[in-house]
Image (tube, rainbow, N blue to C red; front, side, top):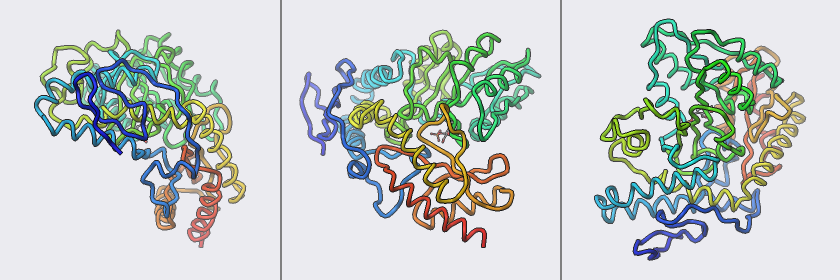
Length: 420
Ligand SMILES: Cc1ncc(COP(=O)(O)O)c(C=O)c1O
């Protein structure tokens, strides 16, 4: 529920379920509040269909009602005086939103630009590159497909090459990952694109160790942190990257179309948004803060999303989700008589379980399995890795153990049908 309040002469929305919402004109604070119960008891905070088993928070997140209400309040405010809003309210509100996000990710607001999604954040960095013929851009073999395509697109324009470091699977060690990345560097490597949490294998890579190796070799690093914010604790000051892009709309539950690109102060020159507009030549923030008329409400709602995240328990909730994902994966592996992948310190709130197939997997069977899961009333990504078929589950605040017992039953039925 949204009510309008007058504060400092500015009418602003306050969503009753999100008491930490604040004026864009006030200093950013994230207040500690009573935490909410988790699991089924908190599910009413979302619009989730009770007849559908939601165990795939990782793909697109899910935005709670109070954050949607905050987003609508910003839209309403914009439409009461569109031109005044864009010219007089938006610039300050956007920077205040960046400041709020900064406190959550261990950064300074001046180093944060908003982008629509992590794909867009990666595109901005990659499409600002100037490469020479035979230069190299290093990616991971398990790097996100859309970003790997962007790297190829950019490299081909310059006659440059794309090189690849292998992430061992299913049970990699940190040493092996760091060594493989180091071994893939050459004198021609101009940039490394490193996923913070891999999409298909759901591994939290040892970023600080990786960036230390890359920096020592003089190779700038772009981190694709699509799954980072809200799944794990972030601190831009210690990550050691030149650029880090992260989604608000996945694990932080911000509205769809809310992501950020953080750039270290010495990596902002020459960095441009993919849409060039009035701010060109005006510096990092001038270029990114205005890329043409659009709906800015997803960005402006990030404070509400962070406040809600903290009400769910913040760090304690993140740890609980990681433990729940491990428990859920073990439960399903036991039900299917298979195994989980990547047990150990590199795992987060997404986990992989092998699906029983009895033959080598291919993309066709993976697509068939996912389609059958959907028809059976749930959704979880399926991937072919090391010749086997794997299911990726997610655990978020609204999930509880029983969800994975149900998922195990559905997966067993689907795999029986596929094998028949
Ligand atoms: C590692 C990684 N990068 C990028 C993306 C793309 O995110 P978006 O669609 O928000 O750009 C994803 C999506 O799951 C991902 O897993």
